[in-house]
Length: 406
Image (cartoon, rainbow, N blue to C red; front, top):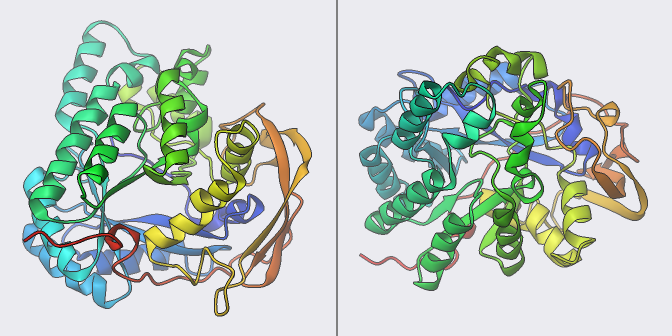
């Protein structure tokens, strides 16, 4: 089971409507192709002439060929690609990377200032627990949660950090969803290691009770890592407020076919396609659930949603700043216009809204991309397909405090 079967860039104007001017998509590696070759092929097929917002990529290692990886890394650095992602989950699929490959990739990436990103879940744990659920007759969406409990992420996060220490490589852990995983990141930082993390909107606002909804509605919330019990949400808010987690992304994956596609797993939770739509309402959820509830300041809101993501991805100060020479990406946020989040306002291409019914405090009154008005009061007013590919700079935020130890 792969992580997602998401829409391409045809719906990327949803990001602009929600105040996000640049998205960083996942570029899969194709068999026997270098990461750069794969990125160019993916870009040609899925983004060129289709992207409405500006965009770039995290390249995903999906071929356990060490020689090919070693060839790919300097090639990426020479061509303005500075983010490299490994998956510790999805055992038995091309997404899975073993520890040896990750360690060797880390050592090589460090030489060129590439940021290594890790999806931390123990693939072996998941396989065993999923099998046990099925033996007990558990087929519904809650099985997804039961087979991916917090310890699955905690163990992999701890192990990923040890691999980074062995490799003497800065590390960025994506979509952190548990308090222990966050604490492992915090402890590594306190020890002086360049280990950072981010979380996602849904891990701050949704909990595992959603998997119990009737009529297979729980299937809408299947993503990886799984949604957590409520106590993890408050811990994560503390983490983003105090800076242990540097950014809040959407991890947007509006599954092709929407809820109907999710129903392919109606009799087997392991067959439910992973992913939830979420990029359009990222800012609204963070403002309403964060700023309005005094969990984060307005300044922290900007840092988490704009400045730090641009720094992590190697765009700053082209993106994430209002400075001479920056791209003039501007969002005017009016906090006085309230409403409810609902599917009828959604541009994301799915047939349901992840945050249906949540209160929305504020609206993106005007959104400018490179100085041009593209969205206004929740409506797209720009021209589709005018997004530009953005190159990344090496030695980004995870390298800022990095001091080689060898």
